Amino acid sequence: DIGAAEPYRARFRDNSPFVLQGAMHDWRALERWADLEWLRAEFGDRIVPVEIGRLGPSIHTADAGLHGTGNPPAPRIRLAGSPSTSVTPASDGDAPPGVSGNQSERGASGSQSKTGISVGHSERGTCGAWSERLLPLSEMIDSFLADGAVGGVGYLAQHPLFEQLHSLCADFSVPRICSFGKLQHINVWLGSGGTITPLHFDSYDNVLAQVAGYKYIRLYAADQTPYLYQQQVHAGGGLAAQGNLSAVEVESPDLEAHPLFAQAVYTETVLAPGEMLFIPAKCWHYVRSLSTSFSVSFWF
Image (cartoon, rainbow, N blue to C red; front, side, top):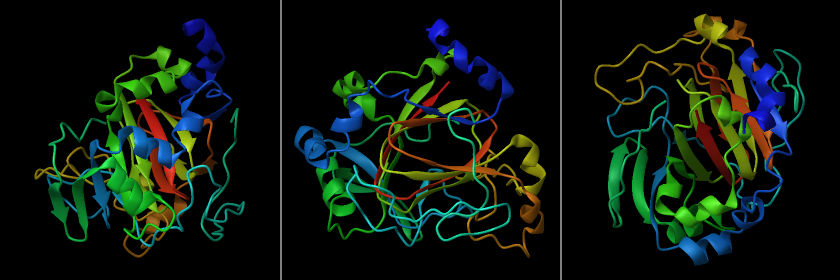
């Protein structure tokens, strides 16, 4: 309700990102969804679209979603584990192993691209080394998420899973801050370590809730757009169709091609289980999973 969300109003009006800690204390999902055996037993036969392989910001295809996977993957761990990448605090301009840039404050501090799922085990779309396959959830878990999995990097990304699995809705609650707008979409992000969402912005305000695993997130305010090489709207559709994607590979930028990127000021954080990150509309963000990870996004 609005009254319960009131403490967040000032930060919401500032239009700046911040981390919410303790707001998921009553989520049964924190325990249940971190258990891969439980997910397999309850929903293993359900068919989901899994993104596999390398998808970079320079690729344009009508079948490709914005959210792809990066190589090489981080070592896989259990969902309930700790980050598999060492994160070292850094000052502006430094680049420690695993994470580069400056730290964010903590505590105080789009549109749907996938519609409908065909039942079956088939190729849904391919683009170079990237592909999307329809798999039973059990096969996704065994191939990409479980200990000893050898399938590489796989991602169930930006998927309205709760429209398929209604019973999961009892395991979480919509964040109170969403009452400042009208809830539009709830999406699930389940994948192995090493998944990457390229630098982009969305037209909705967003609360990203981390249920299990860890994610490194880098954020650039809208006023940094001149340094981020925003791609122009691409008439052929695909990644650049909305004009909300940067041409820069954030953690390995080509500064000869994109020299102004070196001047961009950003904030970063590592989102841990039980934490939420508010990402304002038009705020640029880049996401990399540091471990096997389960997240839920609320667009409003």
